[in-house]
Image (cartoon, rainbow, N blue to C red; front, side, top):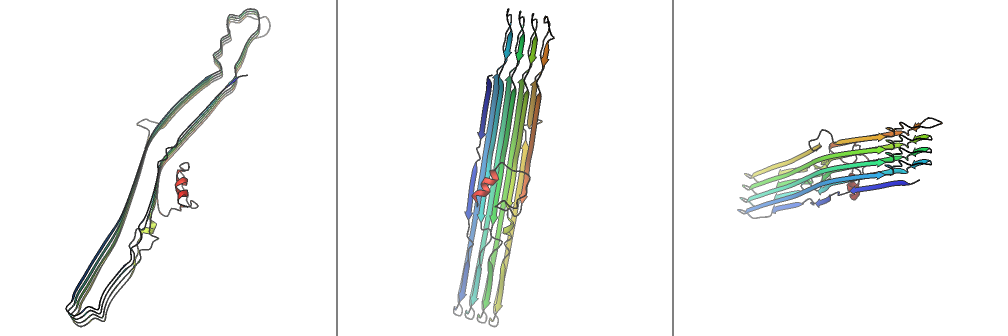
Length: 408
C-alpha cells in the first residue's frame, strides 16, 4: 500500500530580543567648608544630574500561507469487461506546525537613588559668609514597545476517496480507501516586556553639620535630592488564524456494474487542530526605588549672632504605565477553524449481480479542535528573576524564560 505523507514546519522565530543593562553607580558627595578666616565669603554650588534613558521598540509583521493537497484517491476504473475491478488507495498523512515567537524587551537599570551626601561647615571665622548648595537629580526613563501582526492561513486537503468504478462487466468491483490523517499546530507567542529598575532599596545617607563657626557668621546649606523613575510598557498584538481542513476517504462511486459483488470500504478520517495564542505581558520590578534616605542634621557650637540655615528637599517620583491591546484585524474572530471530514457520501447504485448485495462500509471520522487564547497581563512588583516565585497564568513559550535566563 502506498502512503502519501507531508510534513511542514514553519518557525518564524523573529524574537527581537533587546537586552539593555545600564549601571548608574550611586554618587558619594563630601563637601567641607572649614578653617576660613573672618570676613571670608565661601560659596560652593554642586549640581549632579544622572539620567538613564532606555528605549526599546520591536515590530514584527508575519504572514504564513500554507496549502497542502495530497491525493491517493480520485482514481477511475470504468467500462471494464471480463474480470474483477479493484481500487485500493494508500494513506494520506499531513503534519503542519507553525511557531511564531516575536518581540521581547528586557531592561535592567541600576541605581535609581542618590548616594551618600556629607556637608560640613565648621571652624570659620567671625563675619564669614559660608554657603553650600547641593542639587542631585537621578532620572530613569524606560520605554518598551512591541507591535506584532501575525497572520496564519493553513489549508489542508487530503483525498484517499473520490474514486470511480462504474459501468464494469464480468467480475467483482471493490473500492478500498486508505486513511486520511491531518495534524495542524499553530503556536503564536508575542510581546513581552521586563523592566527592572533597582537601587537595592537604599538611597544612601545624608549628613549636614554646621558647628564651631564664629560670631556673626552667616551659614547656609541648601540640599535638594530627587529621584524620578518613569516606566512605560506597551504591547499591541493583531493575530489572525484561518485553518481549513478537508479530508475525504468517502465520496466513492460504484454504479451500473454487472456480474459480481460491489464493495466499498473507506478508511478513517482523523483531524487534530491545535491553536494557541499567547500575547502581551508586562513585568515591572520597581519596588527597590523607594529611595528612603537616612540622614542627620547638626547645628551646634556656633558663635553669638551667627545665622545658620539648613534647607532640605527630598523628592521621589515613580510612574509606571502598562498598556496591552489585542485584536483580530477588525474581524469577529481571531481564530477561524473549518474542518470537513467525509468517510461517507458513497454511491453503489444500479448494480446488477447474481449473488449478494452491494456493501458499503465507512471508516470513522474523528475531529479534535483545541483553541487557547491568553492575553494581556500586567504585573508591578517584586519580580523574581530566577522564576521560582513567579505565578502567572500566561507563558510566552519561553520568551520570558529566555530573558530571565540571561540575567542568571
